[in-house]
Image 1 (cartoon, rainbow, N blue to C red):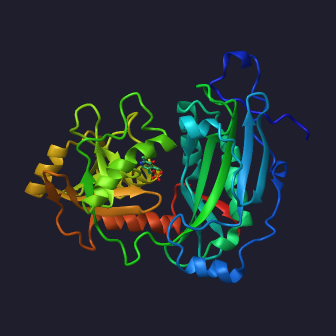
Image 2: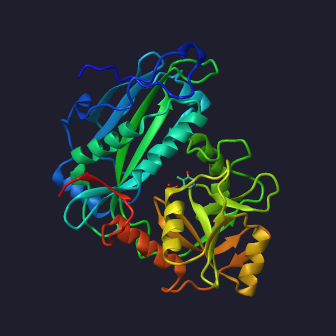
Length: 389
Ligand SMILES: *Cc1c(COP(=O)(O)O)cnc(C)c1O
């Protein structure tokens, strides 16, 4: 006990050379806990849980951990959910030095609560941190933060089908400084929000807008990092999509404007009539979705051929016209997976055939949710237990 638990990122500033990584591990007892004196009443919480929507309501607590250049990560704590105090000169408010993650906790039939492949989120969070000049949060601290928040706010989960607790870890530069450089003081938080089924009346297919003028990410840019700024840049195109009757935007590659990349916050797949699938290959302009990877793994285990490669808009157009491509779908943690009914732009509309109940998309979606909700047992260790029954 009493060790020095500071941790310094691999991208060590010069003046830190020689300081060793003392420990990446904080024993559980290191988290201090301040419970909320005004938790939501059972009645109010149940009312919310009966129709949670997405991202609108938050649980009673949150996790906070501080980092400074000289102390490393310190003061991990559970505290009542509430507003942050930020100096108006905080770096994050000016230069968007902010990253986040999104994953869900699921309650299984026996009452136990599980996270789906959270170590992939922890690893991606570390990658995003590197790209944004932020310190890496040790994987262990990431996982402990989630586990502790879910344990204290477990009442916010229910066994209503297709519901979950959406977890939002994020890191911001909260140093007061207007000079331009990576922050020497940052904060990490985890908040949690009950999530209902994304589709209230069963999964339906959705029209997608193809952005003709805007791109999401460039070669050498931040596209592969889950950073706030990527989202800021996708909002005007999203408005354009909404004005044209579409719920989401598909971005094409920034260099040639010909190849599919991804939606603002979801990855995309094509399904061919022989049952094989394709999805854009990862590069520095595409976010490596946990759902994307899991769909690839499940589809392959199921005998589908899955290619990760370039897919041009032209290939999709002719594929849909000839019937070679039978389905398109998008996937990500929040919505899980939905079929795409049509790709639209000012100058074209490429429709997919009617998506019946036997579609490949929907069967992959069901296989994935069966794993997440503990209805199917798997040989791979994808589920991570957060609390016991
Ligand atoms: C988060 C995100 C995804 C989906 O990732 P999941 O891990 O499957 O939730 C896809 N694209 C972008 C740009 C994202 O930010």
